[in-house]
Image (tube, rainbow, N blue to C red):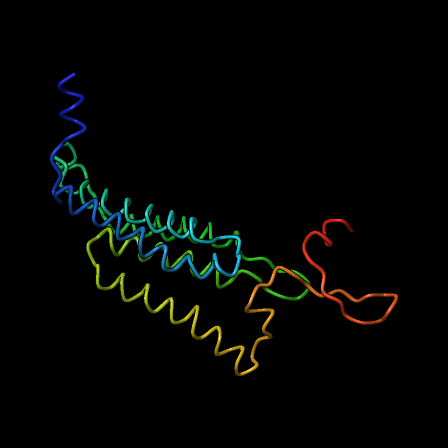
Length: 190
């Protein structure tokens, strides 16, 4: 039983309070990115971005700690933390690609996919201890998502309904020959 407790409370290269602070930081910064997606009711919102960021931070912390493990310090064992970055990047890219849809000549979900990818990068940055890089990236993402999105509408590069997700779409009313709004329940009934 002592071996189990010793294994659970094993010494780490990075002190546990620092590890927990990094993981909590990844949660907060991932939430910063995800809050805009959640507000606009996108498929990958607050929780998804938090989980991507947190998971990425955990992979970074584990990579750091594995380099310093006694059981992995033999000459035949090579540990390359950059492979963790590559694996996380590929994994998050796979998730993000699932958000991208091509329908009726339009690409949808690119910004959500890019946000998820950024959440992964932010999580990795915090996990490896690069707090300022992660914080700057999260703040920059807020500027891109909130400010530039509204600027696109103001400059009429995007229609307001493209930016402000109201949960409704427009449908031609065949009887009257005019556009009328319809909500999601209307769509399901047809």
